[in-house]
Length: 492
Image 1 (cartoon, rainbow, N blue to C red):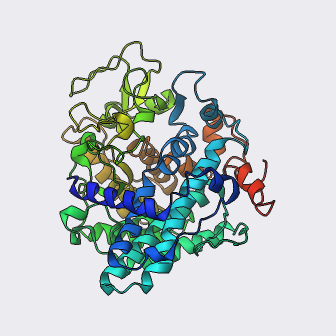
Image 2 (image 1 turned 90 degrees about the horizontal axis):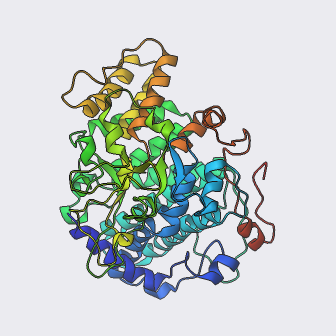
Image 3 (image 1 turned 120 degrees about the vertical axis):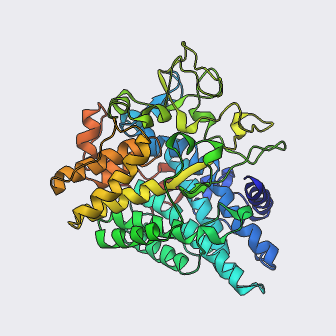
């Protein structure tokens, strides 16, 4: 299962040494926040093109891209999660939980740099690989993979900050700072990149087993559908999700409690996930699991499921126990959460089983893949689009497919939803998204796009200010480094 993961990460590490790791250098962070010159001599062979492409994937599992800041911005801000850990630990994470943050909170700069580091690597491939003499089909695929990944990084940025600088070329030594584009312009770029990627990328089944984890046609369609969903472009959401459903590439055959184990990685439900590997040499994993695992036993204990989420599940819903790990609970691998654990609940979807491979460097270098897009999400997008378009039959069918998988063979729980009217169905779909995708980094952005973030988060006791907190602040260090070219979001 991990053959490709080890291969891609090993190549990516090599590529990163040659390409530069933009998110790590102090000089870069302080003085050149938007890009870094990389020698074009590297792009002279097919091997170099592969390493350059793999280096973009390498960026996906890095600390500033998908670990601490990502968890804080996408999950701790929501009603599904609390800061966790000890009360006095990481007050900057608490600021996100309570919406008391300012533009100087380093999480925003960290997240910004993580996404732009990936964009810089993608731009290198898109701009320089075309000139390499190599197999044309493979060349086209590498460029399509880079466009897919660039679109994903920009999607994270636009959902978090709104309009951001649109950087499409490799930075030069004396490049001027690029001002913010509008959110509409960034969304147009994302659509273009994903549409061009769809035209080239193969389906998941076309890749050999050794290369599972690369961008696919289905993944590009899935993220493009999500982009259209955020823009309320429902016919496009319905069309794209229908194409994914009828492709036969994905299904819900994986039991819910298996999805987030090693056995569930890159399975039939997986549309796209960040690859990580626990290997003896260390350095190929991610700290994603460590920062969320049980504090005092196997991790740091951040991003803990809230009581609000605990109470959101219907009676008997198996997804609750598959998502929430509680004090005193003993898992099937024999691990028991201490009764004295600092927090009453932990994120089981980030748990690394005691019987799963461990890196020689411990859980801080875990092989836990980060699930970014699942087939259940595709079905729920399809359901929402169908409902908004007045297609009650399609909406009901897709929604109940998700519920049927969750209840498995127990007819006493999670009965099928019966359509009554569009408003009732919309609320049922939003509720299903909450419990099906809990702790998977969609909830805060879902609330914002649904236009009810203030209502829901204020009711959960958060200091959310309508008209301000739908977007995070542009990092103050980026504004300072730009000499004031970058402007701040309203309210900050």
